[in-house]
Image (cartoon, rainbow, N blue to C red):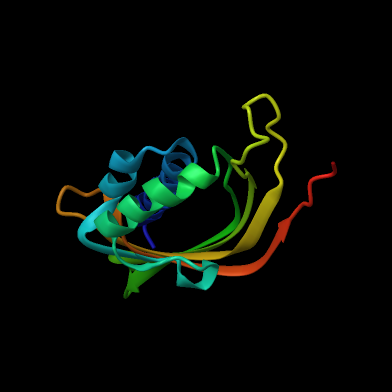
Length: 159
């Protein structure tokens, strides 16, 4: 590989990492317009392993907007990011896949939730698979997101 190809690969990896981080921030902040903007026009998301829906990203964003009202406090920790770039004979391609583990502590809304106690009482964890494509403008967007929830835990409230 030439230095130019090496530099392009590093820049692609950084741009892809920014999309994955943007995904977590959009969900945690409830910024559904930003969530939608991360996907290609044909982009899809699959939350079925976590009891959710699968479908076009815009429909999933609407579902998330309603569902996440149950969790007024949430934070995605996306770690162990394994980025695989398409290889076209030594040149970077226009597709990528990211597998990454997640830990997602959340606070369930309920009669006892007044906003002052924000400690999580619900935690989910598993693995994401993100499919990405380079757009005509050179940026990366999500083509698909699949959630594979491995475990969850809900704390019982004392009282």
